[in-house]
Length: 480
Image 1 (tube, rainbow, N blue to C red):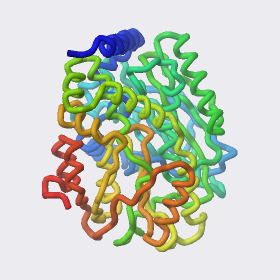
Image 2: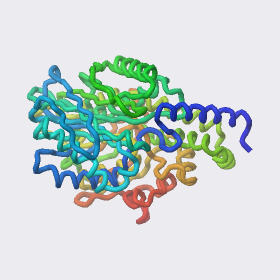
Image 3: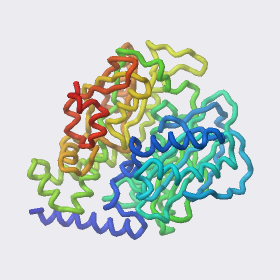
Image 4: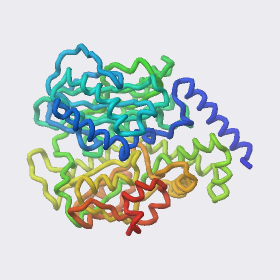
């Protein structure tokens, strides 16, 4: 039987849930944070292949990776053109031609259109065709896709950055979500901070932290709430030294928070997939799995018997609550100083890559969780042996997977980084990260080339029940 004081706190969560529903979001039908992404492996990646087949001859290029995109440019001339289009039909944009451009794209798609690659591609294709009337050739540098339970709220938002020339590389990225913590106050500054920092994370993970500019994506049905969220976005931008851009916001629809982020660097980003060598170490900047306590806490409000099961297994509700608060704190904390460490170990523009000194590849661990390791292996065509995948709250993650609360309880938002580094500098990177307050560790290494594979520690299966993910991590072949 759930204790009265616990039941009272969960009743407050349900009250907040009713408030979220009044604003157009349903936190009880959607998981927290990045877990509302369209499934990358089953839907997004196959759909992108279909769109490449259709639209490449027309001048559209879709980047292979989900991380930030970089290209030469002058950071003093960064201007974004924002377009908001319907899905499923073409739109007459009546806009001045931009010539060659890159785009960071947000797609919000109705859940019934997000379960199958061909259907998903058919909804997006007309919008991309419309954008080609404004910019050609057009490179979709980053596409971020989230699910809505409301058919009328489908749209595609594209922030176009005209390509230019310059002595720097300019990076662009978009990440947007419905809410960070569905159990917390909507105007808690950590909500918008977490959402915007999740977008910045894709810049930070490639060492980009200079000249930051933010084009927020904020929406709410209540104008006073929308104003409060925009105020919090401005505060977050100021706290990390970013410029806030004045851009159009979605006029229809429901709760959204996030944005497009731009920054510049004078270093070559860690996208040297052909330079990964056997013996290189895989470094985690800190443990992962921020979403497990948030989602478990949310589900316990929907079904209080979850609390009984939790406490029967030796985990107190108070411990879950503390874990949830720690997760929200981490999600709303910038990884900017980790970007500084990565930058120190990258070649300057024009300098050759040194396999004994430089970082070849990095990625951040967000909604895909441990699958991020497989993505690195696929990108570099290497075998990675994964000795550990440290989690912030392993007991909560194991509970969430075992009780079918989360298919992948290693997932997170604004998560830590994975860094592939030469053996000779791995210790230096760990020392530098530790001096900046991180809890880094070597969690694996490259053990083969020529075939992408992951051999993961069998312990990882305790936190995942998604069969496709288990297979991708080698856990259906016995693991290590």
